[in-house]
Length: 96
Image 1 (cartoon, one colour):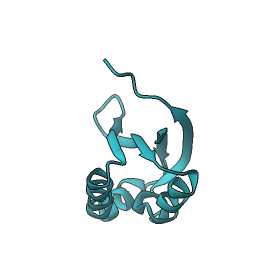
Image 2 (tube, rainbow, N blue to C red):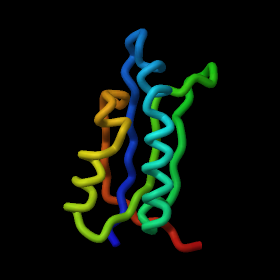
Image 3 (cartoon, one colour):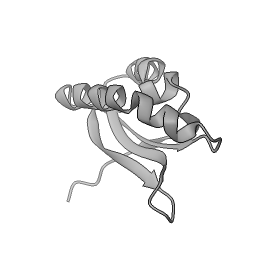
Image 4 (spheres, one colour):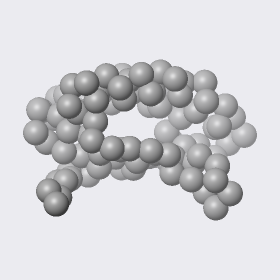
């Protein structure tokens, strides 16, 4: 399996949090499906100093890079314009 670290930052405009909250249930449903498929390793919200959600971090794994691209085309935080910048890096989970 190919593993990836995804670091994504939300927009900073006044509607950014509203966009996040609007598609958040769909994002979680998508993450649960990834978990069932053994593709979701871990993830969560990135918080600012006041505890406000300003982005996300996920570690995902897929059989092929095409599977990663498929996920990106269907991820609600991407299609819902929540994430304004996304960094995707190859990753290897430490087996400890």
